[in-house]
Image 1: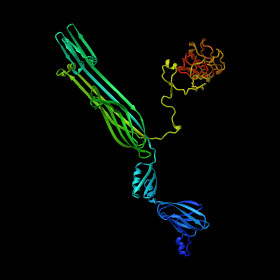
Image 2: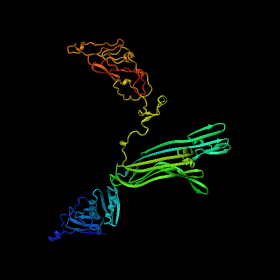
Image 3: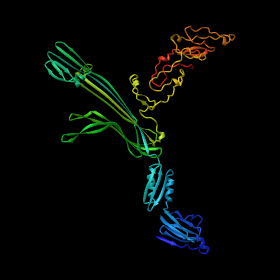
Image 4: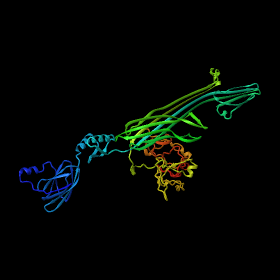
Length: 590
């Protein structure tokens, strides 16, 4: 319904002017543009003023707002019900002003109540006819149900559009550790004695099986001789004695470690199976048999529910199943094993980064059996020859650890370089056939054309220059060595020594009194052997003593004449990998 009104000047009486004037706390809107939007709360008012006197007001919906003239330039707009309407104002200069008015429901009570009860949530309450819309973010999923229950006390219908304001992707780090131990002890003895006048056999436990007896000869079943661990026989023209011994002690150990990572969304189940499937025969009717696969191994089912940015609730179901051949059944010539299961189902709450350990899934089986001849098998010591005993112990222990983590996708600069198998390369023919290497460290991508020089490796005992560093590949011809005797005399270099040169350097004894000759005129107490060529005389200073495999200075000689002990010629050393130091090179003095 639309209505129109003509603005009348205020009555001259002072009482009427005071009643029509706006209150001090009433909001006032001064129109400065030809079109404007105004938002009102239900049952609230606002005052609209124009620069000039208002001549006419029309076009508004009386069911939404109510208009009252205050004076010649002001009107009061009262919101009656939620809705949208447009009000047009015409001033004395025939200028038209259009106001779009939006009236919303009064949800301040509910908004204030939610802000006080849930200070960490950011909820916006919007009234839509007879319903209310709840939009925003909460920090815990349980808060959504609580907020909806409060809103239902104000409105009959609540439209829930709230979301949990935290990361919704959860990675569960699962670590499965299993250990199986088994011990088997077997002891048995079977014998067969046959002669011209008869035979005697003792086969408790079926260690060997008799197939046929004809006269004084005894025939064994094919394949039965593979069961005993030891056999012996005594033969003579008139009799035969055969003994079959089973003495076995067997220990088995199995360790399983699996560390899978499961990625799932909040509230979505994740499954893990560490094992496999085995076929079983299933009758289909009319004499036909089908095949059905049953899973076995370590199974894990988890459903994470994020409670906050630091806490999560996880529903866990773990199961350990093994094939049991002792309780298997025979079906049409096929052996179908049974299934042994250990299962646990639980629900826990923990913080992100904490670890949940499921322990106690331990299985211990002890199986013992004996087969013996009555009376004879019960005799101490002697009964071992008429019996067969078996004892087996099996122990299985399983530990499952689950650690939840909040995760988010990585940016391109956060992706780690490399990956499985990217740090090794295919060996060359030389490395494969001569060095027996199946893979070698990767030196980077293959370069086209001239490769950049590699980074040299510092060697404190053999410093070298860049001209002696080679790139990966075949060895080219080395640089020419300088002729003998061309080393500068100012700084003599180390030369490859001969066996005679490997002798220790002479020890210089310092003077015993301060009145001795100056250091520049001292003479050594011993001279070097005549077979040591091209070595300068020892300079004044501290002497040298042997320590380990190197001649190191202590307190008597200078460093200029120190020679390594046990030094090998560079020409006799071979490089283990291409790209290292060239085998033949001059050595510079450190």
